[in-house]
Image (cartoon, rainbow, N blue to C red):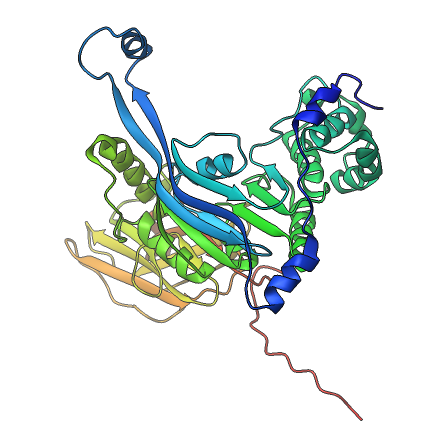
Length: 456
């Protein structure tokens, strides 16, 4: 089925750029230099923020002498360069400018000032199904999007089998996309974006709704793209994916570029930003109130504390504070696989407890208990505690879990004679994000050393 409603003028308005291909990138690499695919120079994007629609109208018609708006710098003097053939990640807190810079690069937004130069055909998946007509069916939307990207109908005809095979949504492709689930929607959108032979692929958090098998298929396609010398720009809060697939990472915060470097370096810096231990550039008084609120919100989430934690117990002993620290002693919710980390809790005793047991356990997001320990098992503390005492407990270990999201529970229990007592227990108190660039089978990594030798 072809989309007859698409006007030929749409194709004429979009000039196709010549395809560079992998050979050009290989030549650049052979000469020791990679030419830039994207150059961003001194980019600024400023929005006017109003307290109410009334203030906007007053200012538009010139009523009142007082300025009714505040300036918000979504991007403030950002410069960066992405070379051909690179897979580059952009990370940062919510409101840091990640999506804004991608929209400017792809032409969806215009900058307030600055320059953007792009060398090569871009395919962008910025928002779920952006550019889809909700009334069209899947096939019609494939032709609509392909035409908007500059392809002829015959070229889309040739690509259609690949796109449908990748999307793998069956006969739903003949139904209006407004009837699709979010998973089906993103499968089709991504299939179109990745199968139209772009030289630059831009993805903004689009894979988070797909199932694990579809995500694996997408990342496999990323690997194919890298081998072909394509350029990928990847924005995600999934630090494991950033660590595994990116060659370089840019860190944005409050509209400013804080740094660029290896995934490990920038993820480490990002964790420091989240807890307010990274020096953040000044960006002007007019922007401070809004940005400070964003930073406080991000810092509150950084430690992974669950605001709806389930707690119960006799409260003869109470867990007053708890946290996760990385191997540098920084409070965090993200731990790099293979590194050491510490679970800390502070417990105040309101009554005499003969033999308190301090414990923690870890489960996955489906609720399966994976691991855990306590001071009795570890034979670390077998004494009694008196009313008024405060104990600091620290469990330090190597992170061997696979990359992903986990929930940590804490408890203070014990025996009063033969009776087991729960003094205070916190279920799903903390979220732990394990950042990994290598995931093996199952829940944890056996950290194998592998040798392969020839036998004559």
